[in-house]
Length: 125
Image 1 (tube, rainbow, N blue to C red):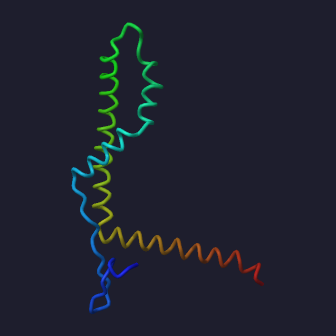
Image 2 (cartoon, rainbow, N blue to C red):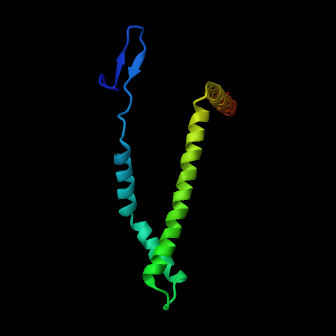
C-alpha cells in the first residue's frame, strides 16, 4: 500500500479512494472489441454452420438466420445475468446478509482450525 492509495484520518480510520468510474461507452467498446477479436467465435461457426446448411440454401440467408438466432440467445442470456447479478448485489448489500456471511465464514475457519489442531495433536505428542 502506498500513501497515494489511502489517507489516515484523525481518528485513525483509513479512507480509501473510490475506483475510477468507467463510462458506459468505454465499457461497451471494450466488450465489442473483445468479442470481435475472439477467434473462438469464428471457429465455432465454421465448425457448426455446415451441419445446418445444404447446397441449395442461400448462404447469406442461412448466415443471418443462424447468426441472428445465436445473437438473440446470447442477448437473452446476458439480460438474465444482469438481472440476477443486480438482485444478488442488492441482496448481498443487506446488513443481515453480510453479518450472516461473516458468521458462517468465521465458523468455517474456526472449524478448520479445530480440525487442524485435532489432526496434528496426536503427531506432536
